[in-house]
Amino acid sequence: MSEAFQFDLVSPERKLASVQATEVQIPAAEGAMTAMAGHAPTITTLRPGVLRVTHAGGTEDYIVSGGFAEIGGTNVSVLAERALPAAEVTQTVFDAMVAEYRAAHEAALKNFHNEPGMVDDAARLLADMVAIGSHMGLSYRD
Amino acid sequence: MPSLKDLKNRITSVKSTRKITKAMQMVAAAKLRRAQEAAEAARPYAERFNAVVSALAASVGQSDTAPLLLKGTGSDKVHMLVVMTAERGLCGGFNSTIVRLARQRAQALLAEGKTVKILTVGKKGREQLRRDLGNHFIGHVDLSGTKTIGYANAQAIAKDLLGRFEEGEFDIATIFYAQFQSVISQVPTAQQVIPAKFEAAEGPTTDYDYEPSEEAILADLLPQSVATAIFSALLENGASEQGARMSAMDNATRNAGDMIDRLTIEFNRSRQAVITNELIEIISGAEAL
Image (cartoon, rainbow over the protein chains, first blue to last red):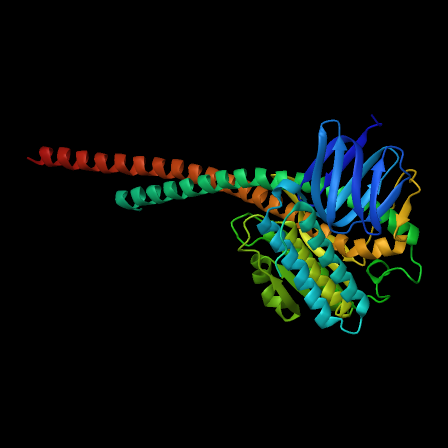
């Protein structure tokens, strides 16, 4: 059993989790990372994805997007612009989220057609969203 | 002197007014509790967020490559005032104090020869500012349809504001709202959100690894910090509004009670006078026989 550390997951509207975790998988902007006790202090932004917390009582999944994670010496906090327990993400919620990112992608295509960076970013976010769906067994409708 | 019937009517009408104000007070008390809970729930996020962003801002500093949202446009010609008030009245001086603060600021800026643009959130503030500053209005956000204020509302306002900033419409943005302190005290507050101002972080700071670079993270987080500031302001405003309404309605209920007492005394006196009058008439009539 590895060492436990304090883990907090907060969104602007509420605190979703505050537990003694042993392992947290974070969908970081530059690739997923797993934080365990003694991880080097790191701050990283998040991309849409699944955040998995492992603690003494089992594991819990959350869908997060936007915001950042702060890995300190003794604690990990994730401040997500949007965070939902995986159980609350039904097909309807998922469809709405995908639709939102698709709209952002289309807006980027229209407004930034000569700035491929912005379009790529939006496309990546959309792809991340779709990937969440396949991870959770939700269908993606075009 | 009003007739007995008039007095009776007035007492009934004041009584029903008291019933209404009493009900409004109780509704406000229930809403206040919910608004306070919402404000409390949002606090951990805002605090942690500001701590990280201000640490980042301090280390990136005022370098040339710092994002515009942090270092500003380098000019202070055009000011954007975001005046956040309630959608509804009957809440004491709540709307007026915020409007007064905003108006003072606007007039001071105009006197210095600066350009002022006003974005109103909540229709009460808009109504009050329309007469003298109406020609500075550039937009309005209507929240009358929203029952509970969510982060999405704040994001929409922030998006609007950031869009205008990117278009170069203004240099400095300040938000006006009332900070909730207690049911009887709400402090009107002005807070500059663009360019962002942070208090220097205290104590030793941990040396973090940044992924991606510090500046990329900061550029990503600053727009979110505008939304966070607006969200906290909206929640504070929500709690303040209900607090102000609760104490205003409490006063109104008490005043109505006093008025009913006074009117009742007057009513009893006049009834007594009528009876005495009638008795005198009967007695003097009997004596005349």
